[in-house]
Image (tube, rainbow, N blue to C red; front, side, top):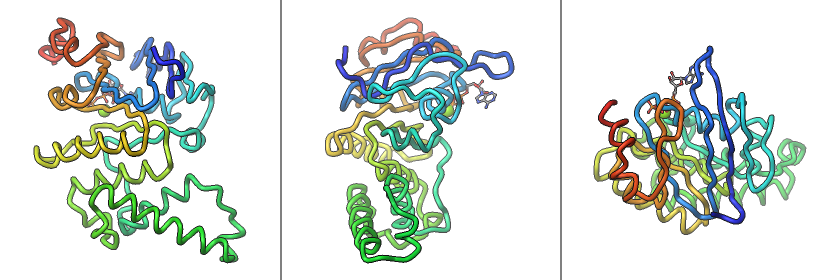
Length: 255
Ligand SMILES: Nc1ncnc2c1ncn2[C@@H]1O[C@H](COP(=O)(O)OP(=O)(O)OP(=O)(O)O)[C@@H](O)[C@H]1O
Ligand SMILES: [Mg+2]
């Protein structure tokens, strides 16, 4: 379908203690695509993210980022290849400020010389100023610039979720994986977040793979949806096709 998929995985599988948590999982995501990954609790969605980002090594299958094999790559190496993610359980540096949380993430994606940092050379300060400016710009995308100096742990939950996405974007990804970004948000915050996700995709020209429990929400913003149950794909298609798919309805009613 896509000529040059940003992310492609084939026959991905992993076994935990004899149990196939994920098996025969195929995915291909093109440039600037927004794809939904849904399925009942325990279906294997987060496990798929862990496989795609190098947290788990697959027992079977292959992963390519921009045509390059990711076999045996560690998560931080994969970040440098252009994949970023957020976590189902928020992961932030709670005792750091909002701004510093984003700046740390920028540094992850930088070819920073340790010597420069230790000796604080002029070029170090120039880069520092540049990172400060970019971090504030990124916070502005999320309308969080006023919170730059607050501690991350003091932010309301919905804002923490947005900060996590800002941090992921700071690593300059080609594809962003979001694991239930709206979890714990109220309906207003959720609607706003979905708006932000659409904006991010356009403005940063990235691809997005979105795990989300709220079906109507996924249907409203994704052009393509993959449904899994018991670690296997049970349906793929447009929101309209998924909404009337018998297997999907069965899986959700069963769960
Ligand atoms: N590290 C692990 N060791 C053993 N079993 C695991 C591990 N990680 C996940 N599992 C199991 O794999 C299955 C899939 O879990 P996973 O967290 O991927 O589901 P999920 O679709 O993200 O669910 P939820 O919607 O609740 O977040 C579950 O049965 C889970 O218990
Ligand atoms: Mg999960």
